[in-house]
Length: 290
Ligand SMILES: NC(=O)c1ccc[n+]([C@@H]2O[C@H](COP(=O)([O-])OP(=O)(O)OC[C@H]3O[C@@H](n4cnc5c(N)ncnc54)[C@H](OP(=O)(O)O)[C@@H]3O)[C@@H](O)[C@H]2O)c1
Image 1: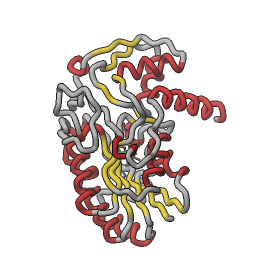
Image 2: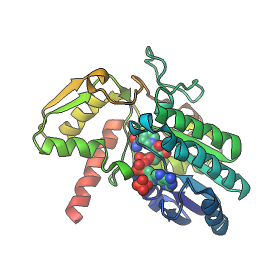
Image 3: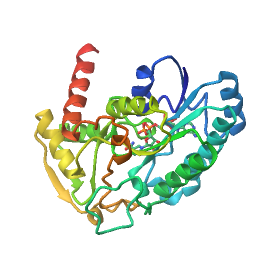
Image 4: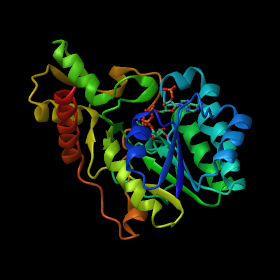
């Protein structure tokens, strides 16, 4: 089996590549840019992969509000061209989407199943939803995987670092932290998502899936757990989304239920707090070996 991973330099891409069985060709943006489809087609046609895994995305949620065309160029039109290329090869396409395709329902308190009707409240969420639709339209052999709140030791590519690292860095500087306590989601460790992706791929049951660690928390509760597990004292306060005032609206509740994944008999991912402990341990081991 031959795999090409696009966006291989991002946090998920870096955790996925070493875990894939068979031949793996990791491609960063210089080798595989989603906004240059002719070059991408030529590259992939020469490589003849069985499976293309797209970890690349425009992930700047707030910037997308003022520059939606940049988000759509990558997350919608770039993904559309990739889906067409994969259909022509032919290759299976694995594509990642987001919990931010939900959010219109302010009363929501139960996890969203794959069958729930999406309703994004941000330009980023809309661009990712568009990406889902074009994959499903153009590439019959696809896995579209919605996930949430990713963190991995490689940090989030273009954003530099991830939520866990940001919390620990700011706390180490002795600065106060104000974190939103009214957005419920499920932080997800990229290692766990990478392993679950492999399990899913092996089934060849194509379709739309939700994959996150188990359980849910607010970003404030996640921050508090980070400090408790890391043994770090922090000046942490819960604030509302309105007080935080980010340019992009975010769902107050975007917990995903992995119904479709579990229906294949695959084991649920571990609870988010256990995953956080594993992340902190991996982080410690890496700093000791440096
Ligand atoms: N991070 C989260 O919390 C989160 C939550 C839900 C879903 N997701 C989804 O999960 C997937 C993986 O996310 P991640 O956190 O691993 O992302 P990431 O670390 O930000 O990596 C994204 C990668 O995509 C690359 N990229 C950007 N524009 C590109 C283009 N035009 N062509 C090719 N590559 C391009 C980036 O390269 P540069 O570094 O050069 O920009 C970066 O290496 C994405 O689909 C994302 O939307 C993420």
